[in-house]
Length: 162
Image (cartoon, rainbow, N blue to C red; front, side, top):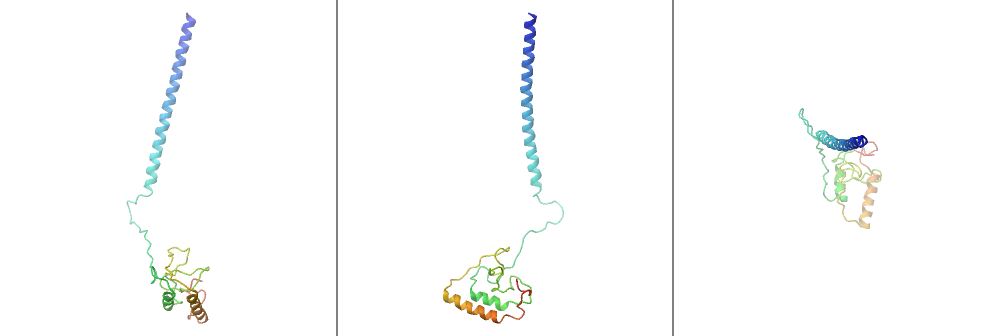
């Protein structure tokens, strides 16, 4: 009977060890779950505080203001370009109000504010209908302008892109 008693004690110990092992696995799993949730919550709070406004000092404005050209959101026709060209001063620094509308940069023409494609604030201008006859008359005007440029219209002038 002693051998039966010992085997029963061994079975009870083994059962208690296996139940302790299962219990410890459950506690460990519960700990990991709570730990990961706590860590996620802390990360969320920490990252949210990066976007919160500061409590001290003056807040700086992030608004960007740009003055667009005279013909912004209007028809950017050859007559409009000639009007802008008549007021263009090559000796004055280039701006959205002072630019050569017939100047090209890397094969592109500027918009109604003198901004070229690929630059910040470029707006695709409203273009008029064209025909071969209109294009030929504009070509003749362009040849006249190239033959007699404005005084100061040289590469590197403050009012020129090139």
